[in-house]
Length: 263
Ligand code: ADP
Ligand code: MG
Image 1 (tube, rainbow, N blue to C red):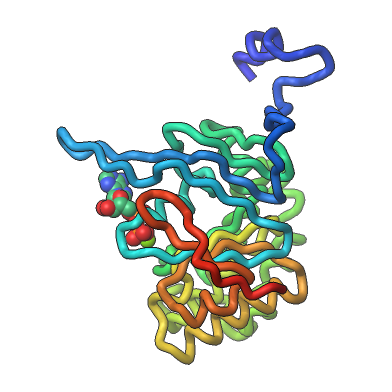
Image 2: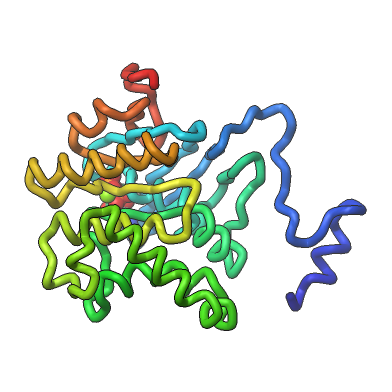
């Protein structure tokens, strides 16, 4: 690290430059916590305040659904939580540690902590299902590690695809797959690095009802069997109804809808 010397000088004895900041002891933090995230977009002379101080606490093993009108900032919020974009202010904490917001450290934390599932899959068209699933491991490892562990990674990718019911589709490219199959490849890809948290942005939004229910139940099964923690942005009230908790993004903040489904 080129600026390690400068960074270390400011840290108390015993801490390293890599240690992330601890939250003040007064705020009780959960498995994943978001504090006062703010984000605006500048459009010419106007400023659009999309997130106006979002707080969120997610317990380990919880499925939290987020609803809200189109344009209310749900995708913006998931991007902020998943370290895909920098906020103006605010912090994301994982197990009590504030996560780095920019540069290589943010990218490394993102690869390790979050799996993403999007409405339109975002698979790479030139690559097979298996290669798409391998991609996160390739990004996480440095080249030497990747070469050494490639066989092991391939086996794991194949196992996850099999679990998603895609044993016979591993060599298919995205255009040779149905919508539901593409989303199942995307779920497999999201799981590749065993992320503690899955961030799902309208995961069933592009699928017909039956297929959507299949994808939802696959996600919920991951929660049941592996205790997978998930934040699911959705328009679908039947998906939200099966989450542990549903929140609504209104006027740039998260509001409790009053619906809680216990365990
Ligand atoms: P949602 O996912 O709830 O539909 P988004 O988070 O995508 O909403 O967008 C929230 C608002 O921010 C919308 O009004 C959208 O037009 C605006 N917005 C999103 N991304 C950008 C951007 N990169 N630049 C300017 N405005 C944006
Ligand atoms: Mg959106």
